[in-house]
Image (cartoon, rainbow, N blue to C red):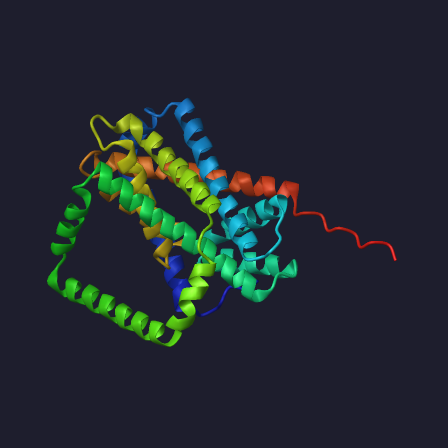
Length: 311
């Protein structure tokens, strides 16, 4: 699989990774003492618990993929789903933002899955994941921190006027494009969406996955909270930050974007330097979990191909 050459998008993604690396290096050099002090406050038991919750959350997302493929009539075994999902997940860190999808498509095609079923399963999976994160994040924040969204609107209102105009124009253009698309495809969109609606098992699996992922971040943050937000609010912020990182095309695996959103959301409760240490520690544990699960998937291998019956 070759990386597209001369692509401006890929260059932007590499530039973003470089900027994140420079920012991390600069922070590590200029805030070395603060970093060491904050790292000393983590206990090994807490870090193990964070890694365990991340593992549960990742397995929940893996199960969602399996449910989506089976929902679209692609017979994938538990072992094969574990193998495909976790190997493809590492590809999301490659600049391009498509390689986890391309590699999954290639593996499903190798298993003779129809192209339309692959398309529908991947759209369903990603729609379920993003939709559930938005719903759970908004609900938890609305219940636990009712003032969060008014503060967010106030922050948008303080954006410089030229940027407000640019954002408004982009939103209007997006709305016009969406309405035009619905005008031509709307008659077929309803039945298609109804067919791809998540089954109850998917909702339960996603709720467990988001709770585990969000709780892992709250547990990572807990040593630094004196009277900070309650755990439902932290889980809600994490869900929305995850979506923000997912939707930004130039940030592989939301790298940098998710961390900035979380640090900004924590600003009233945790010192800026400390919040950056927390999100960095959480990201490192997240990545280590993904690498270890991928190595396990590689060791187990795909489902063995059954030998054809004797003639």
